Length: 76
Image (cartoon, rainbow, N blue to C red; front, side, top):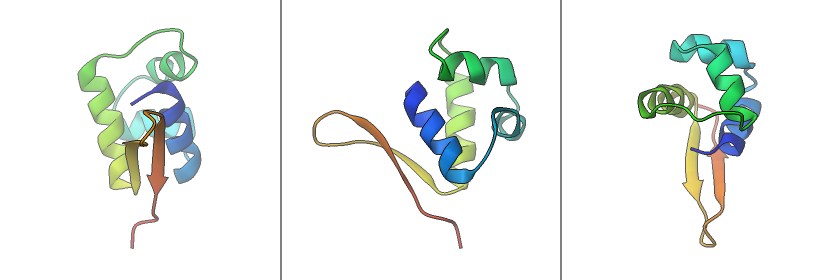
């Protein structure tokens, strides 16, 4: 997951930094630092964020040209 993918995913599910951080049980500061490319995140933190967003209908992907992207389908 790239910083841009995290920003796109949050926008798709209409969650703020604090909201997604709360759902993933991570620090909003950590989410903000990662999204603004001011620092990396640990693998377990990335997995928590990814898991929460995937449960909300986001799919993290890489296209045929190696570009990071997301797909979103609102859960039933």
